[in-house]
Length: 310
Image 1 (cartoon, rainbow, N blue to C red):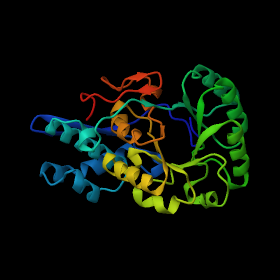
Image 2 (tube, one colour):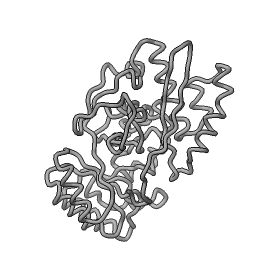
Image 3 (cartoon, rainbow, N blue to C red):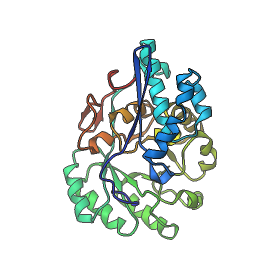
Image 4 (cartoon, helix red, strand yellow):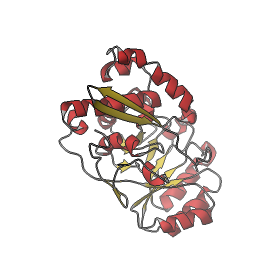
């Protein structure tokens, strides 16, 4: 549960590309906040079938022919997987990494009553990093309850655009009091200008305000970090470009995700190598993941094996 509603199932779209007996896969999560549905994403992918079958579409041309979003993400990641398998190399090597290492991911607690969130925090208290979904009114009580339940965990707060400008400083003071390490998207994306005018008592991270690299210069005076999600950037190709641009501009990086399976998380592990905060716990929130999936040891996320992706 987040400030915009309740989610009880993850609807994903998987793309499979085949070339001379080699298979490449990618997964995306259509997101209603950005006007996407399973049907619209499937239609956009289907629109590329002719170019694919004619051999006129590759990962480079894909960036020009499709806009950022979930549909391009699935195709882009499938191309990465296919290229790696055809080359007999790992995708991270093709991306310029000499190696990738295990990551510590945040574990998400849904928004609820203070009592519900305290109980959830107690159950997850041994995890080093918790991401707390908040909703506006009553957040001070929710945050205090979580801190009581998990006194030693580092905390990320995700307001999902639910806070208001008139109470923003009060919310920031509460977060600072409880030792919050990062706040994601406190205000609506089209009403975040005030962030340039107030002290950041806690570092503030753009999520809904930051989609692609070209967004970043205008956010420099408002945010301290950006959350890079492949479903927003339209794939790993642009996510890597965005991460490099963020580093050049002095932003911190968070590697984020929608709620999807291990196939969606695997490419984002590369962004995690460049990030100060990693939030790739999607598979941990599912009743059942793909097999084989990513391997988690508590909150430690192991790099994907080639059978899964890349």
